[in-house]
Image (cartoon, rainbow, N blue to C red; front, side):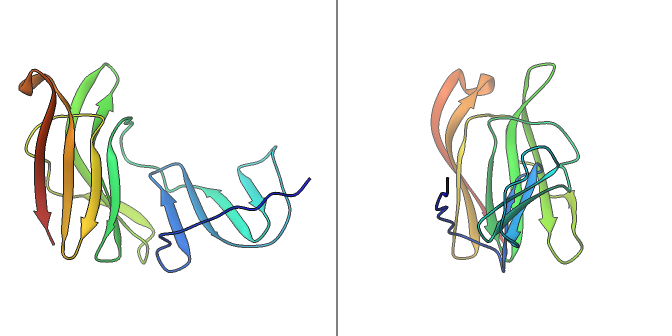
Length: 136
């Protein structure tokens, strides 16, 4: 069985899946029993992982670097922390924290800025419609 995979938004030739796998052009084949899975000319590789566990955060590419911010951790608590992945250094480093802990946030890049939109925060009494901008 063969499958087609559509990929957009690549940084150079890599797309980062926020601390879990790296995607880049590679060889053909499928390896389901390893830390590497190859489909057609696309390859997933493990790492480097985020420095902390999170779910429900948002991420984007800004100035050639991957930005990951907000989310939830265990024990359950909303996060404001940000990490920036530098593909040249192949590592994460802390960025400026967001203005409040929140999860299930939408995030995008536009021009020289990163926007986080909506989400859920106990400090805001639940779901909110706030939009925050971080300029590069």
